View (cartoon, rainbow, N blue to C red):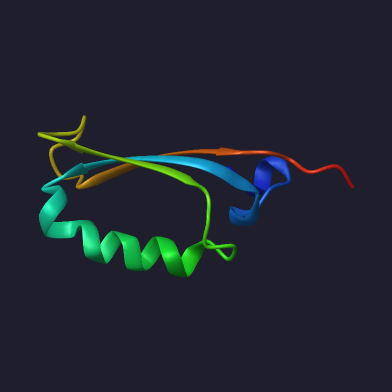
Length: 70
């Protein structure tokens, strides 16, 4: 969806993640996040939850990006 809007992970300014079993999976998620986001920084809120809409999901990610002017 970022590409459809003319954006990339570099344009993400805010991220909220919802985690089932937060303590068990957080280190792995953080390692992947740090690899995907080239700037390495954006506001990030992490929330532990008991379950998500689909029982098989472990994490849900919501991002906000700002499209920069050309």
